[in-house]
Structure formats: C-alpha cells, structure tokens
Image (cartoon, rainbow over all chains, first blue to last red; front, side):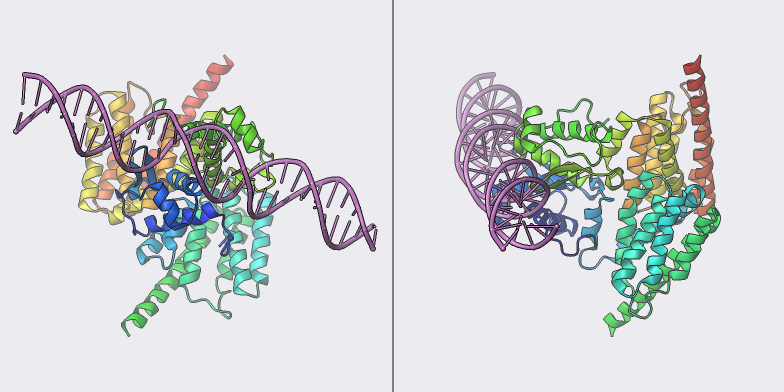
Length: 241
Length: 241
DNA sequence: TCCGATCCAATTGTCATACAAATCGACTAT
DNA sequence: ATAGTCGATTTGTATGACAATTGGATCGGA
C-alpha cells in the first residue's frame, strides 16, 4: 500500500518473512524457532540482520527470546494486533472472511464516532484537508488515483478529531479499506459509486452536525459491507460451480 | 506494572531512554540524532545494542534512519500512539488533563460498542466469566480487591466480543488509564458505588440486549467521568489554596 | 530408588572491527 | 551558471569472539 513492493532493507525482508510465517500459522505459538545461526544461514543473511528482525518481531509481541533457550512464538493473545505489519500479514494472500468481518466491525466502531467528533471539533484547516481529499476523489480518473484519495479522505477525518490516539487507528482503517479494495468487484466504470456517501460525510463535518456525520459514515460502511457480501456470494458460486 | 523495576536488557534500557527523550520532547521532530557511534558511546553500550534499540524505535514510528544522513525524529503524526511503550512514555512525561481526556474519549467510543457487541455474540462461557467478575466485585472488601475485579469485569466484556482487535485496543487504553486512576472507584470508603452500573451491563449482556448494554455502559462511563471532573475540581482548589 | 548439587552443552546477549552502500554537498570543467 | 563528478559522512551488513543464562545430564549420598 504505502510501499508498493518496496525495496525493503535486508532486515526488512527477514522480518516480513518470519512475521508472515508466524501470523499465517506456519509456525505455531509455543514452538521454538531454529537457532539464530541456522536461521540466518537459511535466510542468507548475517546473524546481525537476523537479530534486528527478531528484535522488532519481539517488540510486536510475536516472539520472545530467552538466553540459552531460543526464540519462542508467543500466543496470539499477546500479539500486537493493531500493528500495521501484523494486520498486513493477516491479509497476506487472501484474508479470511472471519478476519474481514472483524475489520469491518472495527470500522463500524471507529469511523462513525470519529466523524461525529470531527464534526464537533474540526478546525478550518482540518476541514480543508477533508475537502481536498474529496475533490481528489471526484477528480480521480483511474483506480489508483481513487484509492489514494479515498485513503487520504479517511485519514483526514481521523485527523480532524484532534485525538492522536484515534488517528493512530488509521492503520486499522487502512487495512480494512485495503481488504475491501481487493475483495470487492471494482472496475474502471463503477469505482466512483461511493462518492455521494463521502460527500454527505464531508458536508456534515463542514456544517458541524455530529449526528448527521455519524449516520452518513455508518451508511457508507454499511454500503461497503453489502458490497462485500455480494462479492462473497459470487466467489462462493464460482467455487461450487 | 508488569515488571516492577524490571531487569531490562541493555538494549531495552537504551530504547526506553531514547524513547522517553523523544516522546517528552527533549529532542523534537525533525531533529537528527547524533551518529550511532557517538550515541552508543554516550550511553555506554556498543553500536550493536544501540542499533537494535533504534530499529525498534523505528518500528514504533518515532524515528527514521537513512543511510548517509542519520536518524531523524519523525513528526508526532506518524508515531505509533497506541504502542504500549509510547503510551507509557506519554503517561510518564505529560500526565496532563488533556491527555486523560483523550484516553477517556477512546474509552467512550470503545466500551459501549463492545458491550453491545458482547450482548449480541457472547457465549455461555464468556457470560460466565463476566458474571464471575461481577460477583468478585460484589464480594470485594478492600479497594485492591475491587480494583482487580473491576479490571477483570471490563476485560471479560471485551473478551465476549470475540474480536481480538477490539480487545487489543481496549487493553492499551485501559492500561494507560489505569496509570492515572482505577477505572471506577471514588475512594476507599465508597468504592462500591458503581456496582449497580456493572449489574445493568451484566444483565443486558445476559439477556442479549445490545442497545440496553450500550446505554448501561455509557451511563457507567459518564458517571465515572463526572467523578473525575469533581476530583479535578478539588485538586485545582487545593492547588490554588 | 530418590533427591539434591554440580557440571556442561547449547543458545542468546553483547562487543569490537571491518567494509559495503547510500547520501549530500562541494568542487570542477565546460 | 550548470551539469557532472568526486569525496566525506553515516548507516547497513558481515564476521568473529566471548560473556551470561538456561535446562538437562551427570554424579554422589542417604
């Protein structure tokens, strides 16, 4: 998303490789990873680069290293579930329906409340940022331009709450939108269909009408959820065909 | 909390030291940290240990290292505000009313929604856990027992949503709020006052009434916030006296 | 046989050093 | 004045060495 395929540093590659192995369940909680020297060799990096990756995974709560024992994969309960990387790894390849449902549920909780708060507190500059994102969506000619502007719009709404904790949840919203983008049937002719929803949110925030903004955002999410359900139906019919 | 004084590893010490310097504002966004060799020397560790700390801080979004340039402190906007360490450093460095307000705002968004979801989806076992926590609160004789059972109650409600993202989110907010005061208690003598609120939440979840549960939770939070305002007033009067 | 203390092998934690790669700015030639 | 080149600076990666910690194996005594 942010980094297309990204020329990640060596340690970054290692971190993603190991992170995905853990999150995808290829190595299960409780298991001990191979010793650092072996792991480094099998990933074709030095122990130095490997260790930096392990440290970051440890900070994300995925593993715990103990002297003399090794690196143990921790239970899912202690994973940093809101971490952008962890969320991304859970969406790697195809996210499960179950996980997408949870992402949508998070949106349903976060974004309407954020829209309402933004309507109450937004400054002129914050409103301008939302407006600019909206106009970029309106002007978008390609899927890529639309996608970028859409993310910007949702980020701007969170920003307008002036609550940086709320804004940090953008990683969740971003992941949810990303999952929606890959799962829903979007093409060159119909990707603009949600523009009116966005306009209603924008106008409510402009006019400082919290409850109107909340409702508009709820409608937008409900609509995208319905869209997901339709896609699932199609996917299932295709699978059983 | 978890680790009293904690025998942190060397790199852990370094990470906390640098993290606090950044979050507290001793080094400001945009500034470049001293080069690694210098930093390592001034902190009395090797470059290896320092680099592991920098890598983790980078993963938390506090800094960004670039070859040939150095480690730049990033803007607060890109900090991982919901990271447990970052939140902890903020609690330590700026325990202002403003920050608490933002935490409370998060709670107002999360917990009512969680209660409603729990009422919709709770299993028998999850309900039993909430019920057990409630009875522990009822049986509490000391503030300590009450506080422990209170935490258990709220955790159990979140657990009953079966959404680990939501759990993770509440968990960090709860921990941060817990650093300032117990979730719902006035003082040693009448800490049980919020028991009826908890009972209403419990019963609504038992009867699978989402909106009732949401309202009950909202009432509980509103009550504890009113309580917070009163104690702030007292603190201010004391300060100006 | 059971139990405890001791020792030892395995593994991570830390350090020191060296060199590769990237960046930025200054300098040079045109 | 400008484009290109070069060099100093700093992070990125690799390597080798040793300290510290852990858990089990070994051994001895009752």
